[in-house]
Each structure stands twice: as structure tokens, then as C-alpha cells.
Length: 69
Image (cartoon, rainbow, N blue to C red; front, side, top):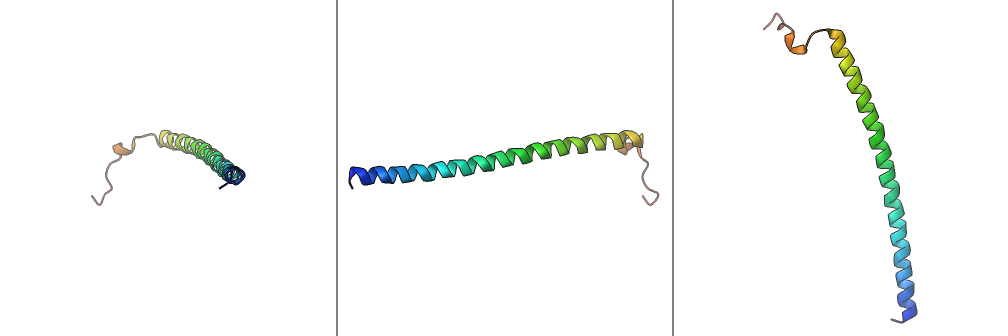
């Protein structure tokens, strides 16, 4: 293998690696956006649940058992 062909092979390999890195970077960026969105949605749901529990007035464990028990 000549020096020129070795250099060409290395350049091709680097080009493929650069493309793979860019693809992975895009995936990671998209995943972080999705994680941020899900984190915000979870916080909203936690707030709604807390509000619902407050509006119910009593703790769920304080309810008497249903009549068929």
C-alpha cells in the first residue's frame, strides 16, 4: 500500500467518522429536547395532582371503606 493510498483511506475513514459524530450529536440534541419537554410535562402533572389532592380536602387514607367491605 502506497503512502497516497493510505492517506486516502485515512481521509475516507475520517469523513465517515465525522458524519457518524454529527448524526450522534443530532440524536443527543433531539433526546435532550424530548427529556426537557417530558420534565416540564411531569412538573405540570405533579402540580395538577397536588391541586386535586388539596381540593379533595382529605387525605386518601382517611376515607372510610366502602359499604361492601
